Amino acid sequence: MKFYKNFVVFWTVIYLAIAFIGRFTTYHKEVFPFFRWSLYSKTPNKVEFPFVMVTKIGDSLIPPTNILDLSYIHHVSALDMNLNVINFYKAVSNNLNESELDHTNFLRILPSGSNFELFVKTLDLSKKEYLKTEKTTKVCNIIDNKIIDFD
Image (cartoon, rainbow, N blue to C red):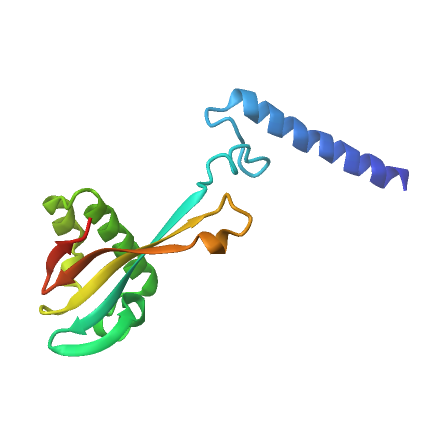
């Protein structure tokens, strides 16, 4: 039994030594598999989730539907579409910079004549009851591939 106690103590000391040596000798101040010192200090307290609700596709009116659920129309995976929505939100929140909007190609995903709305949901994770801090805000409308800003 003494062997196992020594074994555990030995490897614990080695583990902690690597963690502390990495703290003072590496550029990022950490050796990732051993310790991540900055994990919680870099986690934001306020989180934003942009999403797009589609109300019209081409000439067809539909009930407000999340664009992620319309993969049978735009043929883009949910992960890629979510990244497209995030990039589009960043471009719109940067004062509608036209070159950034063209770079996102978001306005060309759905057929021309489509209408959709960009929303952002915010949460404050510093609160214990963070779900009570949920707030959804309409950022803009896109009607026939033209942005109508609400800010």
